[in-house]
Image 1 (cartoon, rainbow, N blue to C red):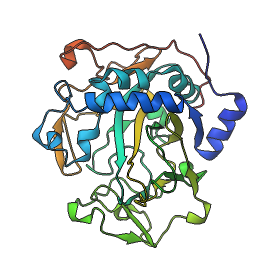
Image 2 (spheres, rainbow, N blue to C red):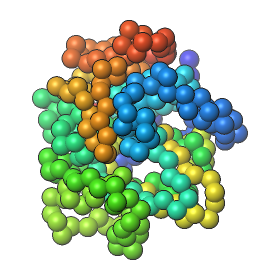
Image 3 (cartoon, helix red, strand yellow):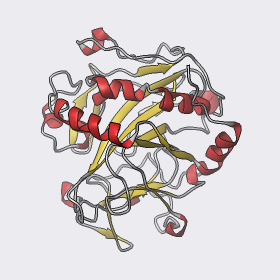
Length: 320
């Protein structure tokens, strides 16, 4: 079995910078062929775990959540050895994928605000992940963002400010105010940016603080490449310049150790102007064993349809 774990030097670089990559998961032609096939299959939401009217409308970002729970390719992708081995190098042997999201950016779309996420209470005001008590000063999720199409400075690639994952500049206990009229309507320091109908600046600890964009690094990726980063790393995306008709599409899997409680005391997600029930949701064990009885794991029973995935043996160097 091939091992894609991080080397000692790669792990040290990751902890210093807050990200690793880009690295190749699929070759360019393979990714393009897979996406041509899967984009049609994803139009069928028969088995999607969120069947609520808000999600079905397509007018809320929640409609892009957790399609790995009903699509075979995405289920295999979040468990891909080239992804999971690298994630386990950081998080340790027992890992769950608790969420996935599509991030489409169409020609002319704004970029995404500079932001950090620790408990993911930023939109709803309620923590969605809680690390155990002995790690109370540590949080966030490990995100693996895979480019399904070209992601460059013309189409709106990700940007990072290296090393910013150690300090939170935002207070997620504050609550942002959702307004769909804010989408594609504002410039911030000369760049069209927003946050899916929110203004992330509302969460700043210091209202007068600004991220140091002179240190920003653009994450240019070909289809099939991925980048792994802490959600607490300061990140954003550029606008889609509109000089090509191809949308930029990223797919993000979010990973935490199984010791982390996901959606504690939560039955409904309310954010981005929509509401969905967690009745059929479950985390996916991608590596090792689930050692946390509080976790609700995805099974055929919870989903209402067959669901299979490969679980990697616990491996990797724990850096958490």
